[in-house]
Length: 152
Ligand SMILES: [Zn+2]
Image 1: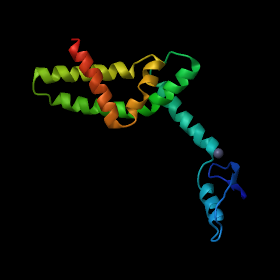
Image 2: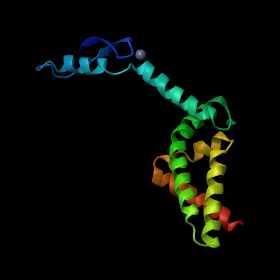
Image 3: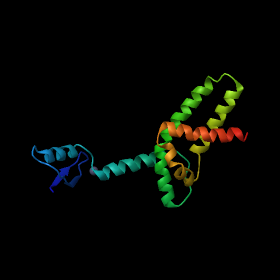
Image 4: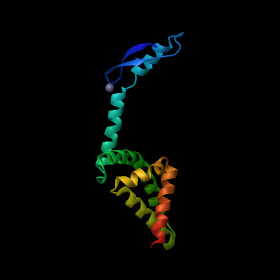
């Protein structure tokens, strides 16, 4: 067990307990590597700032303060995938060859808008695993679009 005082790239100084072999100065190398990074507080702050910035442009969510914080974090990560899917649907729509295809794609765009504007934290929390990847987001929205299409 060895404590190292590391001055991070952000200027903050933190104590790090660096363990493991030190035959070839591995611990000093690790301390030097840590010094090139911003500290954990700044990393958390940057993450929160990104969440706040993203959510500032979206509808205010309803729910308990805890639910809202959680849903805002989920939404901040999900929104990139959702916008990517929207771009693809927009592109396909522009090239749609018949009214039937257009109609299906309009349902997809409706599903995307409904999700982007979903005002309830619960919607985001319940579907959190559906936004883990672009493909999962696509499949989630495809399912929602199909529901809209069936109920037309
Ligand atoms: Zn810092």
